[in-house]
Image (cartoon, rainbow, N blue to C red; front, side, top):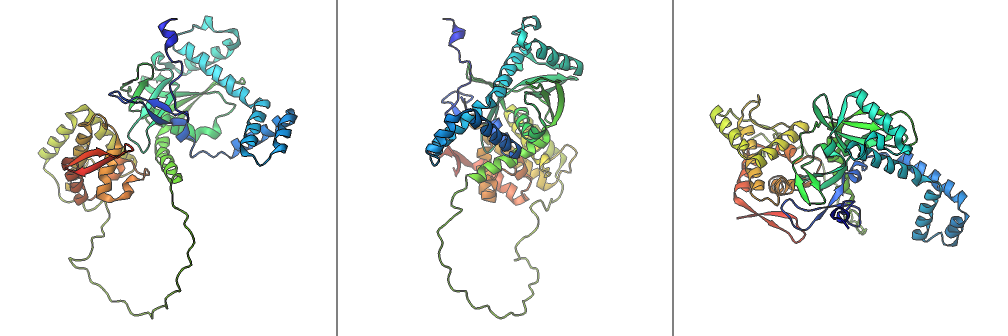
Length: 438
């Protein structure tokens, strides 16, 4: 038996089919939510569910034994579910999926250089030729060593991982690309956009054979490419996909998954006490503004005065001095811009006291993360720090960490800086990071 024969042909997964990813510095592999699982959260599944019901109905007409099985114990959910799955198979619902899987595999072998066009089996020769001709006509070059690579995205409310089909070069720019083999792609565009956005924002490429992480190459984060190769036959077509919109939707999808896990929404009914008598109305006393009136200014104001240019430059130089810190700062700054709460000092923006305070606080927090390789690049610790400043709202994934930073006041930014420079990092029993005063 050769060494190659001992290597896994499929990435290791847990019982929920989630990828098992080893940490960058070694240790026990952890389960990562699949990119496709999150991508489907916001999908409108109405037409898909109708299709599945039709397929079950067709399958039952072909398998009288399944009708008998359901009739014998229609209240046994496990039995009925199994019968429905068998009915789907009987209707050949899995045939298209199997054909699509086989087509994916043969195109992968061609694109990675394992097979030449002359070596392609006759069954696939026509579709492979149409596929390669469509790419050539569009000026699309496949990156051979980036076929079917696991892309890992850390730093969000959930760690995510997924197998991206391709990296391609178009006009000198590198894009993420995905091959779809279904009969149509219109209904799935929203989920595709989230899926490819996850890949384009990957924090590492993971090799499951060696259990190592590699830095991802620069990928366009505005657009991805869908290559539609219908398994049932038909023209091969290419489509640009708005993955910037997909990245925005990703935040909402993660929030939806978090919301679905909420507990305690229902409580036992207790008879309410008798209503108190309604007090007589009186003319409200007018309260004049004073120094003791609580500050109700918006979270993004005031900006304060301007900061000396030399101080700004020194802060920016410090942010660039460490690659890990610089990468984290760039990501948070992009988050702020995407959520329309830009906060970074410099780059043409007015160097206000608030922007300087926010940038200094973010830098201190990024340095705190970089000091611990186990959490470098993870936003879980950053959210823990922000929770100490703005409360539990920091744990909701609607706003990314960079977006949350952009909502802070000057005083809150200074508070965050103090936390980042004086608090230590510990972990709960379940692995959740927690910041404690040193």
